[in-house]
Image (tube, rainbow, N blue to C red; front, top):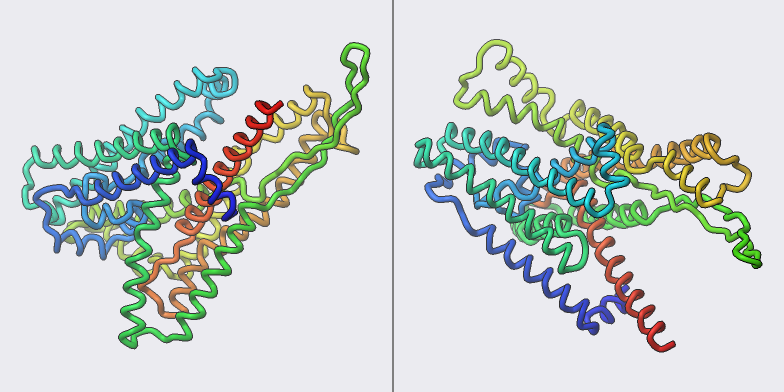
Length: 432
């Protein structure tokens, strides 16, 4: 891998693309420091310390939310819009037809729909956040004009990140949106390391606990790499073909079924469902204004369903397992795989084409998804349990952040290797 990275930097085209990615990262870091005006820093820090929902958005924004910059919402609205459009493509036949048979024009239209949905979601989220901040005393200026300005600024920041991600995908290497999330998470780690070091140096952290924490983090990262790289290879036999007067023997190949088809989406879905009701109740309960059933539900959530409680982790694990099965069935359509095999004259040895092939693939997919769902569920709850057991609160080792960082890094390295292989292939053709 290191040899491939070294070789990539020697290729002018790849070096230029890597340079563009670093340039885009520099713009992202610059935008983090473009803060909204008229902000009460102390009041904002109090809001952050009391809201778990804001902590979720904060670790994806690279500190932009903590500084309340114009990109405080990060790229989250675009991610939600992309997920919704992917789900709607399965539900609505018109979008499914557009995605499958529309070609490049169809993908362009779906991308346009995603951008419009991003604007809508960003406006709704920005409106709720701005109103909540005004009610909490975060803004010195509480006029309607300034409120509209704050909403427009945060929506524009999200759209800028969406545009920047598209530019990285076109002119850089890797998926632009994923790389923006990646750098947003990585930027938080130096602060975590510094805070942990200060706590350990001051005697507030046991050296044994710190060593155990580092070892567990290494084990978790290695397991995530195996999860992303793991495949179940289903053997496929191609039938013999007659082209003109020649007979071509059938080839043996395989279908690579990934162990983790859901990626990090199942954990993001579960976190959103768990934290959104609690955050919504806190929005309606600013200043203790909620009464009756609303106040009772809010108090019950704070007492029995707060993060790191047994009930919270149990529901978290269950939701991750359910969403992993749900999203895996959407990502991999076994009916389409069976139809493509039948059209190409290929078959799975010992399995008849058509419905028997679908049933066989579903059986394999159910087994590997069960293993992945249980692993992702444990990974979702393990970091919080580990932090409580070792009394380490200065380093946030979130399951979502680890999955994103490792997954994006592996995907980017694979794309670099693919470009190197394509370059060598082109050189071979020219030399011939």
